[in-house]
Length: 300
Image (cartoon, rainbow, N blue to C red; front, side, top):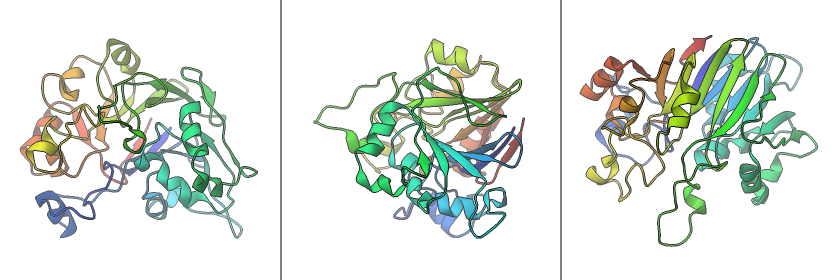
């Protein structure tokens, strides 16, 4: 199995278009210790020929153009992309679908809840239904992407997308088909992809244990990061994300979970781990994690 990190950043990317924060200024200036990153997505292949996109970020066109493995190879129109798998309904997961509207055949895999989000918005009808199949995938029911790759969607703690929130009270953290993780297996090798997760549970730990490669929510370094920086009133938990540090954070949660390779992605522009010369980067690397970069490749 071959995996390419198409994008590593959270919503807004790095640098975010309207951010004048120190990290974004460094990235905008081309500082090699503050590498620019597009919004989180990966591509997976079982044979190096056919590819599947995991989450269609708003930057998908740029990501495809930057990735030769995803370029057309024959005729006037062609794509090696055979399908897209969605792990939620947030803007930074579904907006890139609009890039794929030129009547190119592929399969769009998602839960019934996320398909309902797409069905409710007529703009997604640009994905012509006579060309783009929309298979509904149930949780914990493995399905074949092709003859090489088997996928399985599973529930993780999360919340509804921001644009679907209603009322003044924070939405509850739920474990259902609103926010899901993805397992992909090829033979004995197993990839786990969880770009958004609000909390660790014993069940989730048990599922992840033994994975050969894990991509996991790295949105914030600390829960009050956005509040402390004056960027907004919401904590990481309120946004549906675990933080990397702290006793309830990702590094602590995975300290006793055997995983081959651990990669943090979906990283917010405020998170200091984006800076290669930061103390936080040194800390997470000492804990056995890598910080995702656009174009990073893995082979299992």
